[in-house]
Image 1 (tube, rainbow, N blue to C red):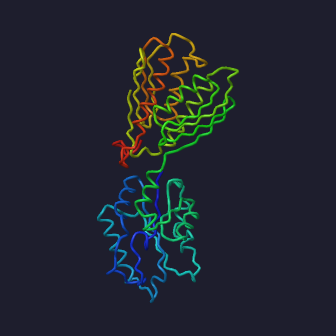
Image 2 (spheres, rainbow, N blue to C red):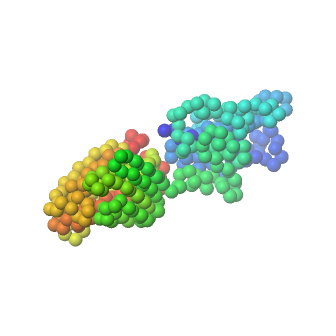
Image 3 (cartoon, rainbow, N blue to C red):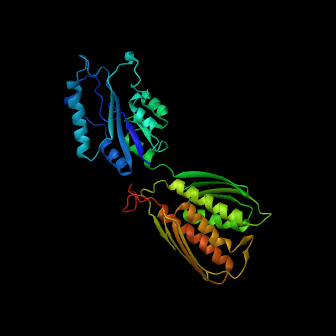
Length: 354
């Protein structure tokens, strides 16, 4: 879904002169770092909309001929750097007019309010006044207060693009009740409780080797058997990983690996957006601890389906404990480079989406 940044103009995109003169063409100046920040945000998939109050525009006190040259210059300068706006919305009224379109009222953006085809959770309003934050609340999006000294364009861009990637999923059926929380940017913190000790240990291996934070709490119908618990944890974990990855901009996408003593697991992972699972391997025991070995590939199939990832796994060796552990560790090690940020904001696909 489309992500939108609703941007104030004066004091946010362009510097506001102390004398507040209306005709400011000779004093035109962009706010520091606004160009590289907006270019990075556009590269990360954001659409820009300008929303500005211009008190008395069109009246003798503020003629259109006084506003237009500065506005056109701003659009030309930004446009020359590849920065464009989907829409530019201007309220010409003063507070005394009590109109519905002057910020913080959302009258200028009623079409966006009615439209459900953009992502409210990822969108934001950025401005230097409290009215901009109030507009954000009216739109149901995040409000970011711009300040050249303490919350400048570089800091705002980091807040939007470099924040920890976290997600929480709750899954409840007649057979299991599960909560899963993941933090892709907090290394190796794991708290696992599924009622199956060896399965808990294997899930901890994923967290440790992927260098992610992982909390799983599952209550399942173990009095029947282990199937529903293992399957549903795989589904919930896959859903949480997918949610935390978002649109996957700037990730490595692929991961490979893992020898463990006499056992060897090869894991190939592609965060492709297409679920596909291939498994090659045999176990000589029915169980390792409380975990049926037949459920190991089933767990990874459930996970890859929910994650919408391509996952190929091959394992060989003699010790069944090592075989299973090599698969879980191998998946974690494959996941680590796949989810790692590479410093860019591009989607790692020629299609432009994953």
